Length: 164
Image (cartoon, rainbow, N blue to C red; front, side, top):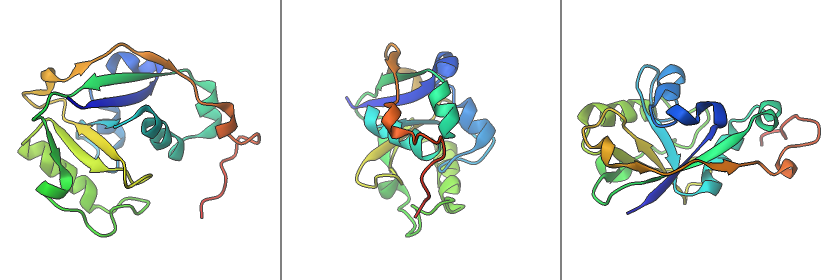
Protein backbone atom coordinates (compact mmCIF):
# COMPACT_ATOMS: atom_id res chain seq x y z
CA UNK A 1 0.00 0.00 0.00
CA UNK A 2 1.78 3.16 -1.17
CA UNK A 3 1.79 6.22 1.03
CA UNK A 4 1.57 9.72 -0.44
CA UNK A 5 1.98 13.16 1.13
CA UNK A 6 0.26 16.51 0.72
CA UNK A 7 1.85 19.70 2.06
CA UNK A 8 -0.57 22.56 2.73
CA UNK A 9 -0.92 25.64 4.88
CA UNK A 10 -2.66 25.06 8.20
CA UNK A 11 -5.49 27.22 6.89
CA UNK A 12 -6.22 24.73 4.08
CA UNK A 13 -5.65 21.50 6.02
CA UNK A 14 -9.37 20.84 6.57
CA UNK A 15 -10.07 20.58 2.86
CA UNK A 16 -6.69 19.48 1.51
CA UNK A 17 -8.16 16.51 -0.36
CA UNK A 18 -11.13 18.16 -2.08
CA UNK A 19 -9.25 19.38 -5.18
CA UNK A 20 -10.69 22.89 -5.00
CA UNK A 21 -7.35 24.71 -5.23
CA UNK A 22 -6.51 22.89 -8.45
CA UNK A 23 -10.03 23.51 -9.77
CA UNK A 24 -9.71 27.25 -9.19
CA UNK A 25 -6.11 27.69 -10.35
CA UNK A 26 -5.39 24.77 -12.66
CA UNK A 27 -2.03 23.07 -12.58
CA UNK A 28 0.58 21.18 -14.56
CA UNK A 29 -1.77 18.20 -14.89
CA UNK A 30 -5.25 19.76 -14.78
CA UNK A 31 -7.05 22.62 -16.48
CA UNK A 32 -8.99 25.18 -14.46
CA UNK A 33 -12.43 23.90 -13.61
CA UNK A 34 -11.28 20.31 -12.94
CA UNK A 35 -10.77 19.11 -9.36
CA UNK A 36 -7.53 17.23 -8.70
CA UNK A 37 -5.39 16.67 -5.61
CA UNK A 38 -1.61 16.85 -6.02
CA UNK A 39 0.44 14.62 -3.70
CA UNK A 40 4.04 13.38 -3.66
CA UNK A 41 5.81 10.12 -2.88
CA UNK A 42 7.67 11.70 0.06
CA UNK A 43 7.55 14.67 2.38
CA UNK A 44 10.78 15.93 0.81
CA UNK A 45 9.35 15.89 -2.71
CA UNK A 46 6.17 17.61 -1.50
CA UNK A 47 8.39 20.36 -0.05
CA UNK A 48 10.42 20.68 -3.27
CA UNK A 49 7.25 20.96 -5.33
CA UNK A 50 6.06 23.78 -3.10
CA UNK A 51 9.44 25.53 -3.09
CA UNK A 52 9.65 25.79 -6.89
CA UNK A 53 6.29 27.57 -6.97
CA UNK A 54 6.74 29.58 -3.78
CA UNK A 55 6.37 33.23 -3.07
CA UNK A 56 9.32 33.28 -0.70
CA UNK A 57 7.96 35.89 1.71
CA UNK A 58 4.62 34.12 1.89
CA UNK A 59 6.38 30.80 2.42
CA UNK A 60 8.02 31.96 5.62
CA UNK A 61 4.91 33.76 6.89
CA UNK A 62 2.59 30.73 6.85
CA UNK A 63 2.38 27.65 9.02
CA UNK A 64 2.23 24.29 7.25
CA UNK A 65 1.21 20.70 7.84
CA UNK A 66 1.93 17.56 5.88
CA UNK A 67 -0.91 15.10 5.46
CA UNK A 68 -0.11 11.47 4.73
CA UNK A 69 -2.55 9.26 2.83
CA UNK A 70 -2.50 5.50 2.31
CA UNK A 71 -3.46 4.35 -1.18
CA UNK A 72 -4.64 0.73 -1.42
CA UNK A 73 -2.93 -1.46 -4.01
CA UNK A 74 -4.68 -1.52 -7.36
CA UNK A 75 -5.87 2.09 -7.27
CA UNK A 76 -2.87 3.60 -9.09
CA UNK A 77 -2.15 3.83 -12.83
CA UNK A 78 1.00 5.28 -14.39
CA UNK A 79 0.63 8.08 -16.92
CA UNK A 80 3.28 6.51 -19.17
CA UNK A 81 1.28 3.26 -19.43
CA UNK A 82 -2.04 4.99 -20.09
CA UNK A 83 -1.09 7.90 -22.33
CA UNK A 84 2.69 8.23 -22.65
CA UNK A 85 4.56 11.47 -22.05
CA UNK A 86 5.34 14.16 -24.60
CA UNK A 87 9.05 14.98 -24.91
CA UNK A 88 8.54 18.50 -23.52
CA UNK A 89 6.63 17.40 -20.38
CA UNK A 90 9.13 19.10 -17.99
CA UNK A 91 8.85 22.52 -19.67
CA UNK A 92 7.85 25.63 -17.72
CA UNK A 93 5.18 26.68 -18.27
CA UNK A 94 3.83 23.19 -18.87
CA UNK A 95 2.73 22.33 -22.39
CA UNK A 96 -1.05 22.32 -22.97
CA UNK A 97 -0.98 18.58 -23.61
CA UNK A 98 -0.37 17.84 -19.89
CA UNK A 99 -3.58 19.36 -18.49
CA UNK A 100 -5.37 17.76 -21.45
CA UNK A 101 -3.97 14.36 -20.40
CA UNK A 102 -5.06 15.02 -16.82
CA UNK A 103 -8.54 16.03 -17.94
CA UNK A 104 -8.74 12.86 -20.06
CA UNK A 105 -7.76 10.73 -17.06
CA UNK A 106 -10.33 12.49 -14.86
CA UNK A 107 -13.04 11.95 -17.50
CA UNK A 108 -12.19 8.31 -18.27
CA UNK A 109 -11.65 7.59 -14.52
CA UNK A 110 -9.80 4.25 -14.86
CA UNK A 111 -8.33 4.73 -11.36
CA UNK A 112 -8.63 7.27 -8.53
CA UNK A 113 -4.83 7.81 -8.53
CA UNK A 114 -2.46 8.62 -11.39
CA UNK A 115 1.30 8.33 -10.89
CA UNK A 116 3.28 10.97 -12.81
CA UNK A 117 6.97 11.87 -12.79
CA UNK A 118 7.95 15.05 -10.98
CA UNK A 119 9.08 17.89 -13.26
CA UNK A 120 11.29 19.06 -10.38
CA UNK A 121 12.98 15.71 -9.89
CA UNK A 122 12.02 13.41 -12.79
CA UNK A 123 13.26 10.21 -11.11
CA UNK A 124 10.67 10.76 -8.35
CA UNK A 125 6.87 10.37 -8.53
CA UNK A 126 3.92 12.57 -7.78
CA UNK A 127 0.45 11.13 -7.38
CA UNK A 128 -2.66 12.86 -8.68
CA UNK A 129 -5.91 12.03 -6.91
CA UNK A 130 -9.37 12.26 -8.43
CA UNK A 131 -11.74 13.23 -5.58
CA UNK A 132 -14.77 12.54 -7.81
CA UNK A 133 -13.79 8.90 -8.46
CA UNK A 134 -16.14 6.24 -7.04
CA UNK A 135 -13.23 4.55 -5.20
CA UNK A 136 -11.66 7.75 -3.81
CA UNK A 137 -13.08 6.99 -0.34
CA UNK A 138 -10.76 3.95 -0.13
CA UNK A 139 -7.80 6.34 0.23
CA UNK A 140 -7.19 6.82 3.95
CA UNK A 141 -5.78 10.13 5.12
CA UNK A 142 -3.71 10.29 8.27
CA UNK A 143 -3.47 13.01 10.88
CA UNK A 144 -1.82 16.30 10.02
CA UNK A 145 1.84 16.55 11.03
CA UNK A 146 3.42 19.97 11.69
CA UNK A 147 5.86 20.99 8.98
CA UNK A 148 8.31 23.89 8.86
CA UNK A 149 10.63 24.93 6.08
CA UNK A 150 14.22 25.27 7.22
CA UNK A 151 14.96 29.02 7.02
CA UNK A 152 18.20 28.26 5.16
CA UNK A 153 16.10 27.32 2.15
CA UNK A 154 14.89 30.91 1.77
CA UNK A 155 17.40 33.57 0.79
CA UNK A 156 17.90 36.32 3.37
CA UNK A 157 16.63 38.87 0.87
CA UNK A 158 13.32 37.06 0.43
CA UNK A 159 14.01 37.07 -3.30
CA UNK A 160 14.41 33.69 -4.97
CA UNK A 161 17.66 32.92 -6.74
CA UNK A 162 17.55 33.49 -10.52
CA UNK A 163 16.41 30.56 -12.65
CA UNK A 164 18.95 29.20 -15.08
